[in-house]
Image 1: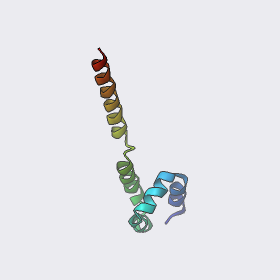
Image 2: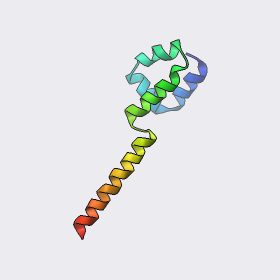
Image 3: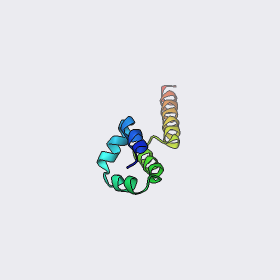
Image 4: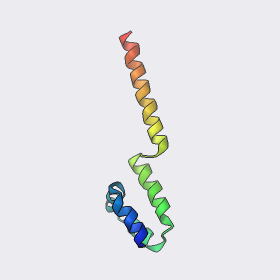
Length: 73
């Protein structure tokens, strides 16, 4: 695996944790460094840290607060 990819992985604990749990990614990252973007995308989907996930969470929180305020009226 290229050193720049190793450095990126070691600097992010979430990536290292995902890589330890899904060790098949070692093979893909060793064979082709372009798979790093796919790895990051898959990791973000799994841990739900994409922008769409964050927006959905905010919408859910706003809906919850709105429902609580309607009950209190």
